[in-house]
Amino acid sequence: MFCPKCGNQMNDNDVFCGSCGSRVSTGANNNNLTTVSKTIEGDFPEIMSKVPLHLGADEKLIEQYSSAFVMSSIAQGMFSLTNKRIIFTKDSAGKAFLKRGGLLGLALNSGANIPSEISLNEIVKIEPTSCIQGKAAMLITIRSGYQYKIALQSMSLGKTNELCKARDRIVRLISKVL
Image (cartoon, rainbow, N blue to C red):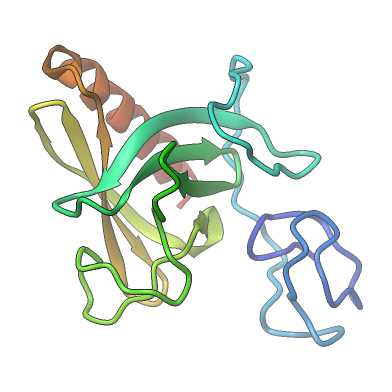
């Protein structure tokens, strides 16, 4: 069995994931566990994380960019794509990028709780949206129906084309495992 949050392989009776520490089960045959873990496969170059990340033993950082929830000045931070999940972290000023249990206006469904990470197992659709003025946005839909619009961003408007290519790469990688 695999942890639905990080994809770590687990024993049938585990209550907590040994990799990410999440409570995933109350015992065997729990519906929260999945027998198939979506994982991005490939030979990716090693990149150094710009922020502290707690990755599982078989988890690898693939892409990392400064990002924001579009049209929200408090939602600045780092977008990290691993072979098993998307991780959102705080900006260097310590502002909350994503708040567990909190609300940010950009979650497209009213009242959506924005997670600090999204397992690839939870994503049902990802699509590119706008690409303008130093931002390349994408729309992620998860199983619950919530949608999150996330923009990779750069302070340099001259980097827009580079960000659009990176966003398209991310969308392709994730789409392959859906």
